[in-house]
Length: 297
Image 1 (cartoon, rainbow, N blue to C red):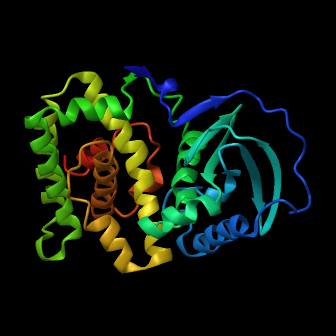
Image 2 (image 1 turned 45 degrees about the horizontal axis):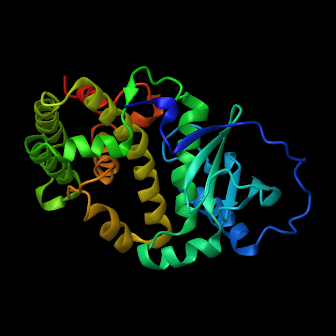
């Protein structure tokens, strides 16, 4: 088990000794710059998606090749940047904490291009996802406010995937929530919420406290970011890709951590049906299922 500060996808970085931002764009590849322009165009249509004050371009974006980063500050079409040693090795989409500042780290576009062809996910969408993690931690101190022990995603998945009874109930939870996005079987949102929370409580009764706490954390942290990511894909790539890559897979249980992304996304979608303004007051200080319960008490 790991304390929250040791979970691998967020690392507290030592202060970087770097010069001020360059005023010229020399050295910043055009295709990387175009990624940020695309995010800016998306933002004109999507706005903050209901999460007050959220804009992925409020945070510096590091394009990394695993050896060096080009750290870019975007301001109304202008890209200022510095070069630094890579803060992560290899291919990574993550956030990096440098002092009090959270930065987005994504692969160089040239590195990402092959993956994009395979998974239908533009690099701009990765910026949206990781930008949301920067927002969660900058605005709400989500990571700092974790009060209990958190399993790593790998450890948690190993525990849950090995419990056949809990696994079966998890699959049922996903199927219940998926009725929200299946028009012919949608039902009433409150009825779905009641059925879902009942099943979720039954399954949680099978889990140790640390496992349940860890699930709540990842469902909130990653599920909301996956929800944001899905809307960015919908805007950029259209309804067909959105349905194929997100809605059609939402009810499918998979071993590993993807199920927490899907569960959290579906909880967000259920909350949209219960109250379209729920995000206005959500502060990432409690699990999404508790917010759902508030609407059905």
